[in-house]
Image 1: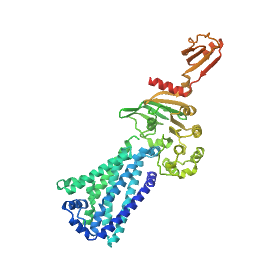
Image 2 (image 1 turned 90 degrees about the vertical axis):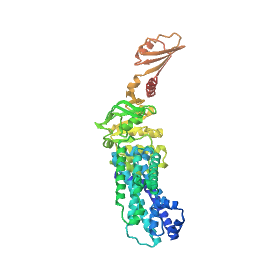
Image 3 (image 1 turned 90 degrees about the horizontal axis):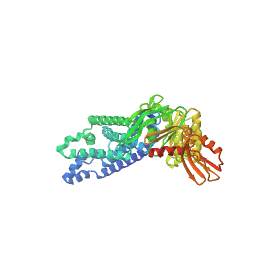
Image 4 (image 1 turned 30 degrees about the horizontal axis):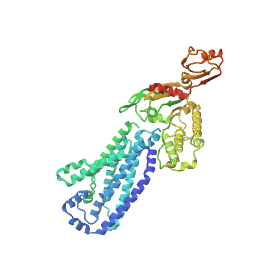
Length: 264
Length: 295
């Protein structure tokens, strides 16, 4: 497993590095713009139509306001980061098995004395490490961005936020790995996983803006990613963490079982 | 060593393997022949534990190829039919990675690289820069570098030039003399005839013939042409083994199955101007079996 892990890390280090760089640049750029706008953000939002305000509230958990809280909540649910983290999590998951089958690489590795479980475990661990690095960069970017606001925040809010984000994208990765474990083409895996993620996002979105179906929100994994709650409560959402962890582990185990039984 | 017992593999509506029984004996080179889609690659993947048979079993020294795949893999060197692998990685990194996974020192790597004429500087380049022939050589090196007990090759000569093919056969023969057992699938009948002790032919997922190449050739009819100086031609149709006879002026074309001593005895008492005996080769064996199957 260690050799598969090290080799897989060598394969993903380049995309991980470039994605990290993009995250850092966007984070600094958004923070700079946010800080430049100052108190005008609140005024701008107040001028928007009510329905639009509702949509914003459903996305950020509360109305984006000026200052560090608004910035933090907005940045952590900013579409660019959601898209970049999701794309990375899905692509490393898809290449874990399905791409290897597509290219025939897996025939070389699995003709060696390594069990399928060790093989997929090495791949999963490499994905987790890659996602962890991205989240670490995200945390560093958040802390660096604080200089724009001139705030020294020791509340741990940032760490809770990043843990929540890390767990969400691990879950998305587990879904990709699961599809990958029985798929034969990476494009098929990408398509299926994107479909699931969009569906989950849509459910969360609908449940946030439509009171009658709010309770259904629990079926979407985005329900367990609420940076605004962390910012407002300043406490870690242990329950959300737990749901994301248990779901991810279960899906990874399912991926292992499927991979062990499949033909190659 | 490897034993297929009533192995069937069904993919949806297609039966890729149908009640296959086959034995790979220790120390032999077995050629596995068949047209495209006959089931060669499926059989190899069942053997290497990549595919679970729908019914039946493939065993290696009593161990199940599917259940004990990782353990069996300690003894195996496998060359897949294609090599599109890890395009952005360096050749040397890949060889190290596969060697680490094998868990055995790559004692033959340097020698194999030398003999297959693999440029050392190419090892420090990404695999995407390799020609197909170079990629194939890398694939061969990864399979043989740890001196495996059993070597399984799926179309090993594809993309290799004739000189390298010759070298590869030399290497395989040396491995055989050191005690390795070799299973080789191929389209190239000349390759198989040059190196294999025994062949098995597969078509539509079923083994249609198996045996020693020389014996199989001996069982085939030979084409014989006898030219007589005059149009007075003896009756050859009564000779034992003659199955088909045609007369073209003073030339007799006939086909004979089995030994030709009876024909030679008859011809001894005749005046013969020319005699051409066409000895069948593996191509003839292959065609005779597949044409019979098609009929």
